[in-house]
Length: 239
Ligand code: SAH
Image (cartoon, rainbow, N blue to C red; front, top):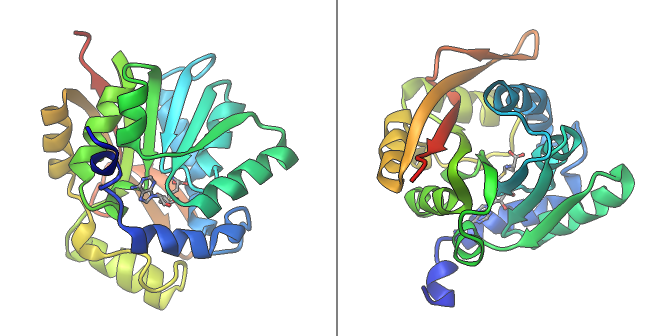
């Protein structure tokens, strides 16, 4: 693959949006509040499926490192990758304060997969697939990055009337939890699409679970209902 082919799967406008607000990644009252709020839940979800202790993990689309740091605190050796330079810089600065050791790189999943195939025990790719032009290519890259038998975790937003109402109208317009334009409904991903792309890449889909948000109690929970936010666990076959 040529350098340009590896770097083609980037929506520069999307990445710029994350760059512009990069300095607020660790402000728990900012537009990144929902990511901070769901972090304990998604860490628990991952740990329900794999032990992280001593594992090599790559966090694809790591942003300011909210999940990367939590994975490292749980005992993993973590590499965080993102294409927003501002996010990577903030993640590196935060590491100086938190003393949580994560290796951050400005690189695409496709490029890292070409450099380090079959390297990681666990790959995480959370809230990222709905921001790239070709999510199937990222799923393929995640599959290449993980060792045979290793696990890949994804999260995204489902695409239907309910997710449009909750994730766009509710979160961006009514509750103001996210800036308007954070998400493009058309890029939301149905679990069936994720399943199809994962299977095509060589992953078995082991579980899909929903994440629900109650705006009154401000509480997030893992639920069976996958109609809006969801998490998925995949495993690369042993061969
Ligand atoms: N995974 C993190 C951040 C989610 S926000 C978390 O859940 O806490 C989405 C992130 O994906 C942003 O940091 C954005 O810069 C990154 N991103 C978007 N397109 C990308 C691409 N092509 N390659 C790598 N990162 C990308």
